[in-house]
Length: 127
Image (cartoon, rainbow, N blue to C red; front, side, top):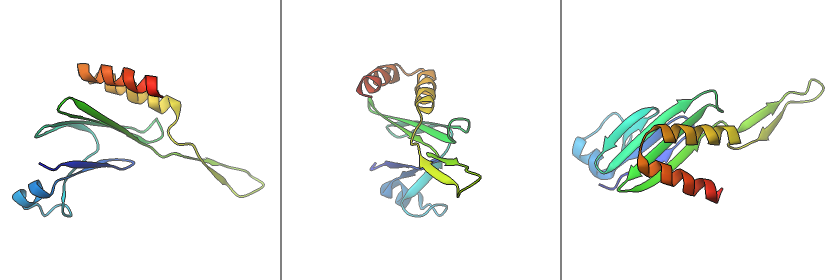
């Protein structure tokens, strides 16, 4: 159905020109068919899992399973503000911290999808 997903820091948008036209959606800008920030969504051949973890860099985690293939993503606030009382504040780019990555893998394993366990092992060996 020509579905694509775009990850933001706190949510993901799901796009499909075909579905948007069929449903004549007015609640989203073309071709957005939905937004997801937590929960599970079955959409044709896709299984989408999403969850928010504010204690881990304001993280948003997503796993998409598409016909046996897996895509995973982490959206975070990746900056750290260093307060210096004698100078201007400094902002440092941290990216995704290791503790946030580990929490992502723990969450992914909790989804109880056998295919995810194999994917996690593969990803961790490539890191």
